[in-house]
Image (cartoon, rainbow, N blue to C red; front, side, top):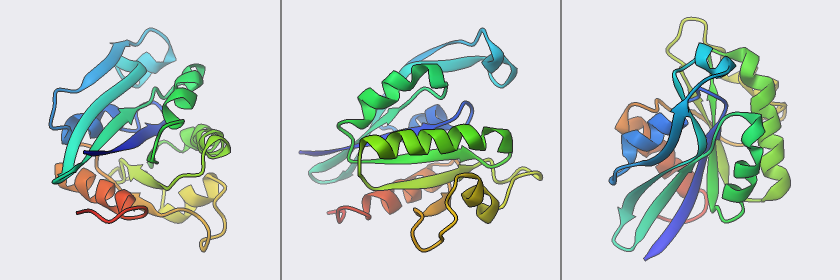
Length: 177
């Protein structure tokens, strides 16, 4: 069986754990712990090491989904997880522009370590104060539309939206059989 390792990364509250829980065909392995710092203002628990889920996408192909922690203090986990990845999705919370700087740092961090296919998934785009794609691209330092990665909307709690995002990513480097 061919295993494709996909990293799901992004800032705190971008939807990483939700995405993996929504699509995994196995019970998700997670390392969520009660938030005790400024993260508690956003959510009650947070990933401190990784999330893991699996999805079969073909007769002999499956995706192993690894979710990273969102806090910069856990960047050693980003480094560990990205090393054997086939591709990644950077989730960006469209209604929290104050997190764009951190998303940009994550993007730079990952792209300095590997050259693999990736896309940017915008979450929380249904909020009235969500930023437009063009503004988020600029905030991420992606000012050349011809060379920046694909940016798509992903709702981490809707299976069809997650499935479409994963298919879009996988099609960048291998045909689904």
